[in-house]
Amino acid sequence: MKIWLDGGLQDTESARVSVFDHGLTVGDGIFETVKAVQGRPFALTRHLDRLTRSARGLGLPDPDLDEVRRACAAVLEANPMPYGRLRITYTGGHGPLGSDRGEHGPTLVVALGEATRRPDSTAVITVPWTRNERGALTGLKTTSYAENVVALARAHQHGASEALFANTVGQLCEGTGSNVFVVLDGEIHTPPVASGCLAGITRALVVEWNGAKETDLPLDVLERADEVFLTSSLRDIQAVHRVDGRELPGTPGPVTAKAVRAFDERSAADLDP
Image (cartoon, rainbow, N blue to C red; front, side):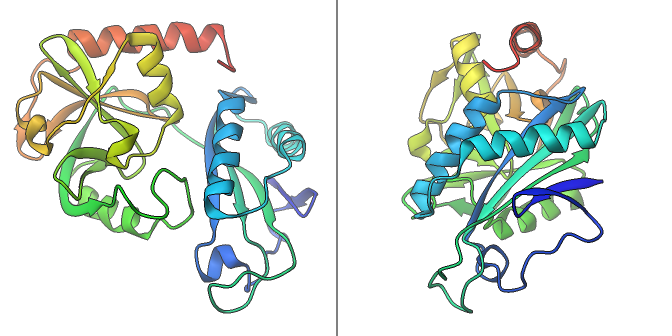
């Protein structure tokens, strides 16, 4: 396997990042996960736009998007596979053992791993921890993912593939690595970005292509929603058949199934929407 590091391709076995990299020592970094099908990335322009927004929000220099594109193309060409997870990681680089940044400049890593297509439906749980809709990192896709690791481990313990958070005022927010949608009386709703959720790439496409409404929703909407589904770069749209102890019969429901068809058709027609 080959990855991109320090401006070129390197073997994964020999590639090295400093143990003093700020991404490792204090989680000072951002990333993007891009779906790659037959060596072609999906929605790369949108992902790179968000990478830049996250860098600015964290106070990192703007990434060189031309280099990032070259890196993605090189890694995809060097590692042919039918379905992959293309991961772009951009950190504060070599720095001191503290929150101050060093002067060495950022680190860029682009890697590719094999992935499997998600099942048609899944189970989720809610967790007692909250997202802070007013935090310094709110809305940024940073490498500070420890909260998600803990929540996802709990989901797996309960036979689920995702954990859903409320925000500090009790509104439905997001999953550890996904956005959440609910269907109420035939209409699709999803929490607004102001809820503290990440502005997901797939989320934005589903809103645009299906007329979904951005709505403040209480967490307990999950107890009465007609349908629930998740979106993310690798899930695309995935129906939810169980929320905590509540089974949703007939999953995927008709509204979710229609959204899946629309997403499949439009994403196949345009790889960089």
